[in-house]
Length: 292
Image (cartoon, rainbow, N blue to C red; front, side, top):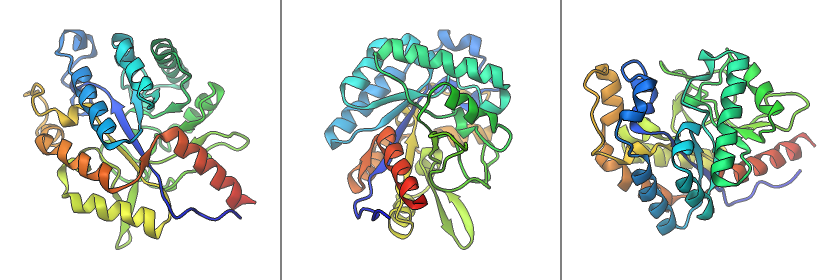
């Protein structure tokens, strides 16, 4: 059996969607209105690319096909900087709202646009709002059929928006006879409870010390890599407000936007980070070693 390395390289990822495409606002902003709304994704991604360059880290950008279709040069800048471009589906429709055929069409459409925009093969996928769960086992069949190498689409927690509590906390193979690897977003454990600790709103709202504790637990006690994600709009306190959204959604979306960039820089400097495709290859090798 191969030894587990002392140096843990965690997975750093950005879910590329604009402020009006988030699940929190899907009930109040119609998709047909998207083209008429202020586009802020490029200016936010430019800031993120500058931060990553300054910190000398590489990451994976899980990008909506809708965004890639409108920002081809930006997709090429991401790739030219040494980052991975991966799929976030076409327009942020959650997997459990689609049937198998609609999901297959969604991921195929997004992949073609991403590959055409950036000139690279797309091998990774993340479901919008981590929406692969116990209701959608067929989603892995579709991803495998279309040649994806890995998915990072599961949140192994209970949450009002998403979650698959029974899923493994760490990388697993969801299909027999397939090399496809699923890499769930990070959770930590405390007093018998499983806690969301992989980024997004939890990172913005909770004290930085919580994220440090959680990643140290995963890297130290569990000896596994953490998976962290955030969105471009989370570093953008000047984004438009959506007054018609439910109060809970507005609180989740707008809390601590002004503090996010500073917390991100602290996190990136404190831990080791890399691309998700590289993490997937390491996790796949470790799975084979453990099975040997």
